[in-house]
Structures are given as C-alpha cells and as structure tokens.
Image (cartoon, rainbow, N blue to C red; front, side, top):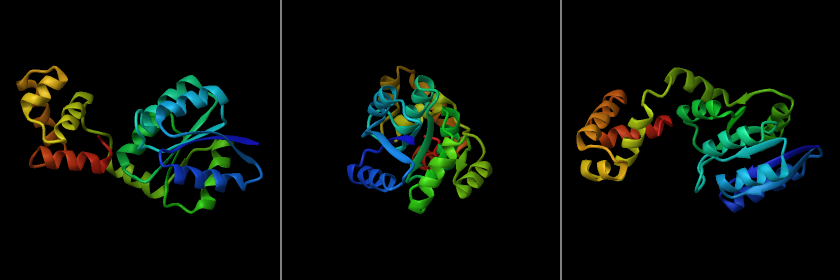
Length: 201
C-alpha cells in the first residue's frame, strides 16, 4: 500500500483528490494538510511514502514545504501538483527535492499512475513544462533582486522598500534596475509581471 499525504489549501479540491485516490486499491491517503506548515507537521507524524503538495498555499508554500519535508522525512518522495505551470517553479521544485511536477489540468487517471511511478523511484515531469523550463533557462535574478522586486509588486515606493528590507535607497534602486534589465522589462511593474509569469518570484 502506497501511503500518501495530500496538501492543498482548497478543501473541495483536497476532498476530491482524496476521494479519487481512495478508489485505487494500492493507494491510501494517510494524511491531509491545508498549508505548508501543516504539511510538514503531518509528514513528520505519519511518515508517508509520497507527499502531494500544491504550490500556492498560505503560510509556507508548497516549494518551501517540499524542501523541509525532503530534509526531515528523507524517505518521503515529494510531488508538486499545481495550477501554475511556470518554468521557474519547476526548476525551483527540483532544487527543493521534488521528484514530480504535474499541472492540475492533467487527466485524473494520470495522477494515480504518477504516484505509482514516483513510489517506484522514477521522476515524473509534465512534458510541456519540462520543455518550457529548458528553453527558459535558469532564474536570472539573485535572491536579493527577487526580494526587492517582490517588495515592489504592491506599488511600494523606494523609501518603503528600503525601510521594509533594511537597505539603503540607493541599494534598492540598484537591485530594481538590475531586475528590470535581467527580465528585459521597461519598468518595475513589467519586471514583476515577467518574473511571475516565468515563476521567478
């Protein structure tokens, strides 16, 4: 029996996934979680064979939870299931220790098959997303550039961003300028949009 942890913040989707997987004779839903922090706690408690994590969750997101589960429960193989098929997310997920990355519009029957393949030691990546990730290349933004660009996403001023991140205004301008250049954007708003589309933020 393959013991699975489901982490998804939308209760209806989580319930549907649990019901679907419950129909499989060799898969048991051993635990459920509504956010990344809870996913880690449940994983440590129930020691599942496979953890199925959504990316967009409150608190610690799926990518953060993936890294923590991989570290704390090394025998558990982590799969990322997401609505957002962004190339940067795939690369980040693999770096965090995920062994599978599937988008939610995949047919339901493929999920159970993917869980079996992952449990058997394989990697399972959505083919279209894998091709997009290869063509997109690595994330060009440094961690600090990502921090500054993310802080700018809500329209905050240079002064606000500097205060929030404990940086000088000049340093914030330099990071923003570099992020705009690296994303080939015309301004910070466009840079945020491009970075989000690629999964770099």
